[in-house]
Amino acid sequence: MTVKAESLWDLLDKDLWSLELDFESSNRKQSKILISVFIVTRQRPEMCQEAIRLLHEKAKKPESIEYLLGLDEDDPTLEQMKDFAKESNIGNISITTFKRKPWTNFHEYSNELCYKAVGEWIFCYTDSKQMLSDHWDAVVNKTSKNSVISPVIENHRGHRVDRNGVRKNTYCYTPIIPKWWIEELGFFSDTPHSDTWIHKVAEDCRMLVMEENIKLYSRRKKDDRGDVEDKVAKRIYKQRSEHKGSLTKHRQKSEQRTVKKLHDILKRRRSKK
Image (cartoon, rainbow, N blue to C red; front, side):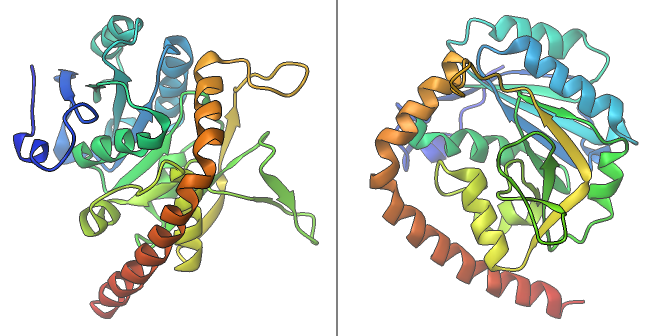
Protein backbone atom coordinates (compact mmCIF):
# COMPACT_ATOMS: atom_id res chain seq x y z
CA MET A 1 0.00 0.00 0.00
CA THR A 2 1.06 3.63 -0.37
CA VAL A 3 0.86 6.26 2.33
CA LYS A 4 1.50 9.90 1.43
CA ALA A 5 1.57 12.65 4.04
CA GLU A 6 0.23 15.46 1.84
CA SER A 7 0.46 18.02 4.64
CA LEU A 8 4.25 17.64 4.66
CA TRP A 9 4.53 18.20 0.94
CA ASP A 10 3.40 21.81 1.31
CA LEU A 11 6.34 22.45 3.63
CA LEU A 12 9.07 20.23 2.24
CA ASP A 13 10.71 19.70 -1.12
CA LYS A 14 8.92 16.87 -2.89
CA ASP A 15 12.08 15.73 -4.67
CA LEU A 16 13.83 15.09 -1.37
CA TRP A 17 10.88 13.81 0.63
CA SER A 18 9.13 11.41 -1.74
CA LEU A 19 8.16 8.68 0.67
CA GLU A 20 6.18 5.49 0.21
CA LEU A 21 5.36 2.73 2.60
CA ASP A 22 5.65 -0.32 0.35
CA PHE A 23 5.38 -3.10 2.84
CA GLU A 24 4.39 -3.58 6.45
CA SER A 25 4.40 -6.90 8.27
CA SER A 26 0.94 -8.00 9.35
CA ASN A 27 2.51 -9.25 12.57
CA ARG A 28 3.22 -5.74 13.92
CA LYS A 29 1.34 -5.51 17.23
CA GLN A 30 1.53 -2.00 18.66
CA SER A 31 0.17 -2.87 22.10
CA LYS A 32 3.19 -5.08 22.94
CA ILE A 33 6.00 -2.99 21.51
CA LEU A 34 8.49 -1.62 24.06
CA ILE A 35 11.50 -1.03 21.79
CA SER A 36 11.54 0.20 18.18
CA VAL A 37 14.76 -0.60 16.29
CA PHE A 38 15.31 1.33 13.08
CA ILE A 39 17.92 0.54 10.45
CA VAL A 40 18.69 2.56 7.31
CA THR A 41 20.29 0.13 4.87
CA ARG A 42 21.28 -0.15 1.22
CA GLN A 43 22.55 -3.17 -0.74
CA ARG A 44 23.52 -5.12 2.36
CA PRO A 45 20.70 -7.67 2.65
CA GLU A 46 22.65 -10.51 4.26
CA MET A 47 24.37 -8.21 6.74
CA CYS A 48 21.12 -6.48 7.66
CA GLN A 49 19.24 -9.74 8.10
CA GLU A 50 21.98 -11.12 10.36
CA ALA A 51 21.89 -7.92 12.44
CA ILE A 52 18.14 -8.31 12.98
CA ARG A 53 18.36 -12.04 13.74
CA LEU A 54 20.95 -11.47 16.47
CA LEU A 55 18.91 -8.68 18.04
CA HIS A 56 15.92 -11.01 18.04
CA GLU A 57 17.80 -14.05 19.38
CA LYS A 58 19.57 -12.13 22.15
CA ALA A 59 16.44 -10.38 23.42
CA LYS A 60 14.67 -11.48 26.58
CA LYS A 61 11.27 -10.52 25.14
CA PRO A 62 11.70 -10.52 21.36
CA GLU A 63 7.96 -10.13 20.83
CA SER A 64 8.18 -6.65 22.40
CA ILE A 65 10.55 -5.35 19.71
CA GLU A 66 9.70 -3.95 16.26
CA TYR A 67 12.09 -3.40 13.36
CA LEU A 68 11.67 -0.38 11.09
CA LEU A 69 13.78 -0.65 7.94
CA GLY A 70 14.48 2.21 5.56
CA LEU A 71 15.59 1.45 1.98
CA ASP A 72 15.95 3.52 -1.18
CA GLU A 73 13.26 2.83 -3.76
CA ASP A 74 15.98 2.04 -6.31
CA ASP A 75 17.80 -0.44 -4.07
CA PRO A 76 18.29 -3.62 -6.16
CA THR A 77 17.96 -5.75 -2.99
CA LEU A 78 14.59 -4.27 -1.98
CA GLU A 79 12.55 -7.33 -3.01
CA GLN A 80 14.96 -9.60 -1.16
CA MET A 81 14.42 -7.58 2.02
CA LYS A 82 10.64 -7.63 1.53
CA ASP A 83 10.75 -11.42 1.27
CA PHE A 84 12.79 -11.60 4.47
CA ALA A 85 10.32 -9.38 6.33
CA LYS A 86 7.40 -11.46 5.10
CA GLU A 87 8.82 -14.95 5.48
CA SER A 88 11.01 -14.79 8.59
CA ASN A 89 9.63 -15.91 11.93
CA ILE A 90 10.77 -12.69 13.60
CA GLY A 91 7.62 -10.69 12.87
CA ASN A 92 7.18 -7.00 13.63
CA ILE A 93 9.22 -5.93 10.60
CA SER A 94 8.16 -3.03 8.40
CA ILE A 95 9.88 -1.54 5.37
CA THR A 96 9.64 2.07 4.27
CA THR A 97 11.06 3.13 0.90
CA PHE A 98 12.48 6.55 0.14
CA LYS A 99 13.55 8.53 -2.87
CA ARG A 100 17.32 8.34 -2.56
CA LYS A 101 18.78 11.19 -0.50
CA PRO A 102 22.23 12.80 -0.48
CA TRP A 103 24.30 12.60 2.67
CA THR A 104 23.38 16.18 3.64
CA ASN A 105 19.80 14.96 4.11
CA PHE A 106 20.70 11.59 5.62
CA HIS A 107 19.02 12.36 8.95
CA GLU A 108 15.68 12.58 7.17
CA TYR A 109 15.68 8.78 6.81
CA SER A 110 16.01 8.43 10.57
CA ASN A 111 13.41 11.08 11.35
CA GLU A 112 10.76 9.51 9.13
CA LEU A 113 11.33 6.04 10.59
CA CYS A 114 11.16 7.43 14.14
CA TYR A 115 7.78 9.05 13.39
CA LYS A 116 6.44 5.54 12.75
CA ALA A 117 7.91 4.03 15.94
CA VAL A 118 5.49 2.88 18.64
CA GLY A 119 8.00 1.66 21.24
CA GLU A 120 8.84 3.44 24.47
CA TRP A 121 12.48 3.38 23.35
CA ILE A 122 13.93 3.95 19.87
CA PHE A 123 17.20 2.20 18.98
CA CYS A 124 19.29 3.73 16.17
CA TYR A 125 20.93 0.61 14.75
CA THR A 126 23.06 -0.12 11.68
CA ASP A 127 23.27 -3.14 9.42
CA SER A 128 26.98 -3.56 10.19
CA LYS A 129 26.46 -4.17 13.92
CA GLN A 130 25.99 -7.48 15.74
CA MET A 131 24.46 -7.74 19.21
CA LEU A 132 26.68 -9.61 21.67
CA SER A 133 24.74 -9.21 24.93
CA ASP A 134 21.96 -11.51 26.08
CA HIS A 135 18.78 -9.81 27.35
CA TRP A 136 19.91 -6.45 26.04
CA ASP A 137 16.29 -5.33 25.88
CA ALA A 138 15.84 -5.88 29.62
CA VAL A 139 18.76 -3.50 30.26
CA VAL A 140 17.11 -0.86 28.08
CA ASN A 141 13.70 -1.23 29.69
CA LYS A 142 14.99 -0.78 33.23
CA THR A 143 16.86 2.44 32.39
CA SER A 144 15.42 5.83 33.33
CA LYS A 145 13.51 7.36 30.44
CA ASN A 146 15.31 10.64 31.04
CA SER A 147 18.40 8.98 29.57
CA VAL A 148 20.07 8.42 26.21
CA ILE A 149 21.74 5.00 26.21
CA SER A 150 25.05 4.41 24.44
CA PRO A 151 25.92 0.73 23.89
CA VAL A 152 29.58 -0.31 23.80
CA ILE A 153 31.01 -1.27 20.40
CA GLU A 154 33.68 -3.81 21.33
CA ASN A 155 36.00 -3.42 18.36
CA HIS A 156 35.41 0.21 17.41
CA ARG A 157 38.29 2.66 17.15
CA GLY A 158 36.11 5.26 18.90
CA HIS A 159 36.95 3.82 22.32
CA ARG A 160 39.37 5.19 24.86
CA VAL A 161 40.70 3.75 28.11
CA ASP A 162 40.46 6.00 31.16
CA ARG A 163 43.05 6.25 33.96
CA ASN A 164 41.41 3.31 35.77
CA GLY A 165 41.77 1.05 32.74
CA VAL A 166 38.06 1.15 31.92
CA ARG A 167 37.17 1.29 28.24
CA LYS A 168 34.82 4.15 27.36
CA ASN A 169 32.96 5.09 24.21
CA THR A 170 34.25 8.29 22.62
CA TYR A 171 30.92 8.81 20.89
CA CYS A 172 27.43 7.43 21.05
CA TYR A 173 27.43 5.60 17.71
CA THR A 174 24.18 3.67 18.16
CA PRO A 175 22.04 5.78 20.50
CA ILE A 176 18.91 4.49 22.19
CA ILE A 177 16.55 7.36 22.93
CA PRO A 178 13.22 7.57 24.77
CA LYS A 179 10.14 8.03 22.59
CA TRP A 180 9.38 11.40 24.19
CA TRP A 181 12.55 12.76 22.49
CA ILE A 182 10.72 12.53 19.15
CA GLU A 183 7.40 13.74 20.55
CA GLU A 184 8.90 16.79 22.28
CA LEU A 185 11.62 17.84 19.81
CA GLY A 186 9.83 16.77 16.65
CA PHE A 187 12.83 14.92 15.21
CA PHE A 188 15.46 12.29 15.94
CA SER A 189 18.29 14.47 14.67
CA ASP A 190 18.57 17.91 13.12
CA THR A 191 21.81 17.22 11.21
CA PRO A 192 23.27 14.35 9.14
CA HIS A 193 25.85 13.87 11.93
CA SER A 194 23.10 12.13 13.89
CA ASP A 195 25.14 9.93 16.23
CA THR A 196 27.77 12.47 17.30
CA TRP A 197 25.15 15.26 17.38
CA ILE A 198 23.02 13.22 19.80
CA HIS A 199 26.10 12.39 21.88
CA LYS A 200 26.95 16.08 22.28
CA VAL A 201 23.39 17.14 23.06
CA ALA A 202 22.75 14.28 25.52
CA GLU A 203 26.09 14.77 27.25
CA ASP A 204 25.50 18.51 27.73
CA CYS A 205 22.10 17.70 29.25
CA ARG A 206 23.61 14.98 31.48
CA MET A 207 21.38 12.37 29.86
CA LEU A 208 24.10 10.14 28.38
CA VAL A 209 24.45 6.64 29.88
CA MET A 210 27.42 4.61 28.58
CA GLU A 211 25.95 1.11 28.98
CA GLU A 212 28.60 -1.57 29.44
CA ASN A 213 25.90 -4.27 29.64
CA ILE A 214 24.93 -3.78 26.00
CA LYS A 215 27.84 -4.75 23.78
CA LEU A 216 27.98 -4.71 19.99
CA TYR A 217 30.47 -5.88 17.39
CA SER A 218 31.07 -3.89 14.20
CA ARG A 219 31.36 -5.89 10.97
CA ARG A 220 32.46 -2.97 8.82
CA LYS A 221 35.33 -4.31 6.72
CA LYS A 222 38.46 -2.32 5.95
CA ASP A 223 41.26 -2.89 3.47
CA ASP A 224 44.99 -2.92 4.23
CA ARG A 225 45.12 0.88 4.35
CA GLY A 226 42.32 1.08 6.87
CA ASP A 227 39.80 2.36 4.30
CA VAL A 228 36.26 1.04 4.30
CA GLU A 229 35.78 -1.42 1.42
CA ASP A 230 32.02 -1.08 1.18
CA LYS A 231 31.03 1.07 -1.83
CA VAL A 232 27.99 2.56 -0.09
CA ALA A 233 30.07 3.59 2.93
CA LYS A 234 32.77 5.06 0.66
CA ARG A 235 30.18 7.23 -1.08
CA ILE A 236 28.83 8.49 2.25
CA TYR A 237 32.29 9.25 3.63
CA LYS A 238 33.19 11.15 0.46
CA GLN A 239 30.03 13.28 0.65
CA ARG A 240 30.55 13.86 4.36
CA SER A 241 34.08 15.18 3.86
CA GLU A 242 32.92 17.46 1.03
CA HIS A 243 30.24 19.12 3.18
CA LYS A 244 31.97 19.04 6.56
CA GLY A 245 32.80 22.74 6.70
CA SER A 246 29.48 24.03 5.37
CA LEU A 247 27.49 22.14 8.01
CA THR A 248 29.58 23.10 11.04
CA LYS A 249 27.76 26.36 11.84
CA HIS A 250 24.35 24.76 11.39
CA ARG A 251 25.33 21.90 13.67
CA GLN A 252 26.65 24.19 16.41
CA LYS A 253 23.53 26.35 16.39
CA SER A 254 21.34 23.24 16.35
CA GLU A 255 23.18 21.76 19.34
CA GLN A 256 22.80 24.97 21.36
CA ARG A 257 19.12 25.31 20.49
CA THR A 258 18.35 21.66 21.24
CA VAL A 259 20.26 21.60 24.55
CA LYS A 260 18.30 24.64 25.78
CA LYS A 261 15.00 23.03 24.82
CA LEU A 262 15.93 19.68 26.39
CA HIS A 263 16.89 21.39 29.66
CA ASP A 264 13.39 22.88 29.82
CA ILE A 265 11.77 19.54 28.93
CA LEU A 266 13.76 17.62 31.55
CA LYS A 267 13.00 20.22 34.21
CA ARG A 268 9.29 19.84 33.47
CA ARG A 269 9.42 16.04 33.40
CA ARG A 270 11.32 15.81 36.67
CA SER A 271 9.00 18.24 38.43
CA LYS A 272 6.05 15.91 37.70
CA LYS A 273 7.60 13.05 39.70
